[in-house]
Image 1: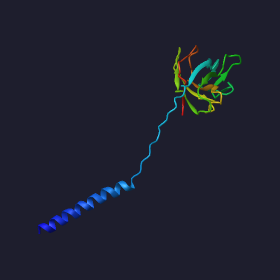
Image 2 (image 1 turned 180 degrees about the vertical axis):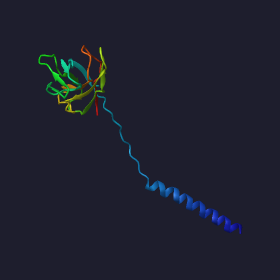
Image 3 (image 1 turned 90 degrees about the vertical axis):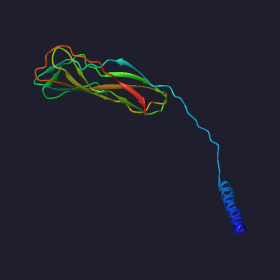
Length: 165
């Protein structure tokens, strides 16, 4: 019986060591390299301020200012006067050429002598920087006037954010 236990112990040790050797026989490894490229951050600067111009209220409504052309379009309940100082906003952006990017402009409310007026913004960004890495984007939007909006100057600060995708 002692002899058969020694035999079983020896057989078990042999099977175990065969398993260890056979596992390492099939193992493989490779040494690789990790890389990273740090790119310049995007920059943005206002070159022309956004101004919705002179607006006449007639029952409340909206005025849209096109981000590409700066053309104003009055909705029902509003009208625009020529020579009213209207202009789209223009922003110079720079970054790494041919990289894609996005533009974010949260809405705001213009405040002044009367009720606040909501503004939503639009832009004409292409979403890809030219090879040279510099571009201009236009900003327009839509302003909503209330019925009986108090005459006077209204303003608000807003933030234009550009970032790589």
